[in-house]
Length: 304
Image (cartoon, rainbow, N blue to C red; front, side):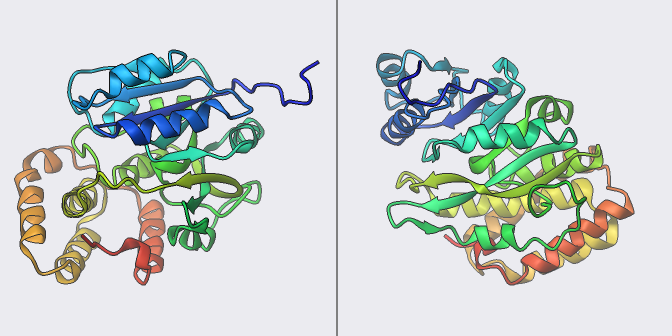
């Protein structure tokens, strides 16, 4: 007998990357340790200098702690996924944590839909308990999808709030090392769809987000602009890429941060053009449809 408690569900490994956010990470690990699913947890410490690794080892010895010795950005997730021994991986950041029962439900959705690569959860902002503005965009996605999807089809996902099929992630190469961090999901999502995988939003999954105070909003904006430009030229045909670039240059804030972001993007053009592989027309049509739907979204504005 389990005394009324749910049995553990070991189908999913939780993957977390962190850098110099010891206190937030410890809170997240505490929340994950209380989940009824009791998932294995892998943390990649991206070169923290604030004692993160020591604190995790001391307080959460059950966690698999990876220490690559430098800040790998999103590639830290790749390192962790390769260590996972479960069919699914649940990504969360050091300032997000899964609601009890959500991982179990996500695994069941993936179990019963073999072409579904990823399910993205509803995001609740803490401590207010309100929905993140991006949730409305996910819920109202205009993309068509097959009837068997358990929610709206998505063109991308949020790495802080998504459960993904491990073999799909690995087959698509994981997060691209060139992008490092900042909107890195769009390239992986596009490559998954190119391989015939589907992504969707699932209303009955929930993740909580207490935004870290240890973040540089301007640097995040610069990375977002740079990576949007790089994704555009890596995967979109010439005319849409030119139009998207022009729109971005017209609409980003008029300041030195935007200038630096564009200069960073320009400095990467040699490798971007060398790896350029435009998507076929059907997938480009989906990207364009999603781009039009996002054009009025407050959740997609470059701020900071």
